[in-house]
Image (tube, rainbow, N blue to C red):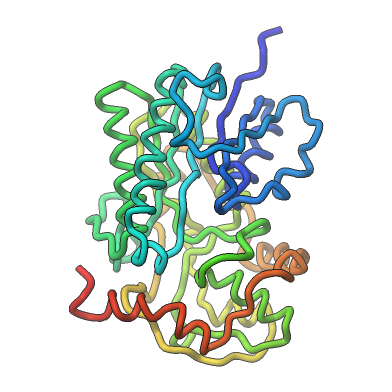
Length: 335
């Protein structure tokens, strides 16, 4: 019997990465998760203790040489490792370029040394900036802040390795992923983490603007399935947008969660709508959404205690946390 194929998941202790680990193990792979735990949590992988097909490496990809044993035998590398958040990227651009660009280059070199059959890059729809919708893969690239730029530059590095070194690369530009195991601490950002803690605390939801803005939310297991397909397909050199293709308003999220609302100012540089044109990924990979927005929200609410230790954001603390955002991305400042 031939040995099980090896899949490397960088950022494997993170939100999407840990679900990717679960999926690839279920698909019969041996999985090696790499995560320096800057954003990930070992608790996301605790249920895998004792699994002989799973191993965890607590290092930054930048600290792992291409000939390191962790890369050996890798049939596929799925690269989620990196750092997110808008405001910190504006304040610390060098850190973001290092983690998201150089971190990607090191992972590419590990995959190249291993002779991996596929490298799948987790890109961000933020590369499009204030985009026309629905947004297709050929939309102009207009990153509005360093995080978006760093993720796009990481994607460009991946395709450069594809062109120069013939490394088989695919990239998926994620729109708005949500679900269990999403980060519960850190900078002000994703609406789910903010709202879930506010619900636990019995505080009103801090809705930006009038709440009519819509986001192309996609549940995390559907995201992982798209990456699995991208890793197993014979297609290479491809870019796909990934969302549900059915944007939901923040007001709809409030309706599903149930609670009072307080309104805070709309932020510059944020789109009114994010909407992925998913025709290409549906046609080329046969990918389909399986978890509806209402079902996904219900899954999160069932695990709401996971957000018990998350920071409680108030209008005043949000104002302080987003000052840099307003200062740097106000009209006339952003490109």
